Length: 128
Image 1 (cartoon, one colour):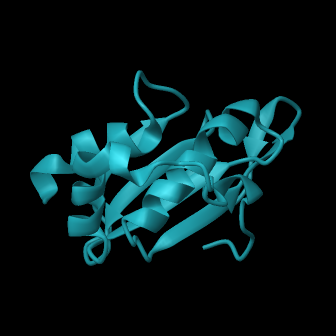
Image 2 (cartoon, helix red, strand yellow):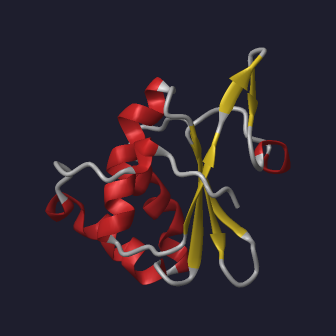
């Protein structure tokens, strides 16, 4: 795990938890059972627009085990901790794993039709 923290994961103070009751219910139910691994870059436009809300959702859901993996660009390639091991090509990438087994439960890559917290909660509903 990297010791560095992504500035873009600082919770957005304007995020409205009341608008995400179902999403938060999933995160709250899994809060102690999962580790959330976040690859991103403070230089990345997509990360700057998506990760603050995700950070706020994890904070509201009291998810305690969140690991940050800062990614840099070198020669058009993404480099950083865990990039090769986890096959990170696009950022933000978020991997949710079972804390006990290390089994990957869900993965968000770069962009979907819903916010990161909502998209992952939909993928994780069966694990609650």
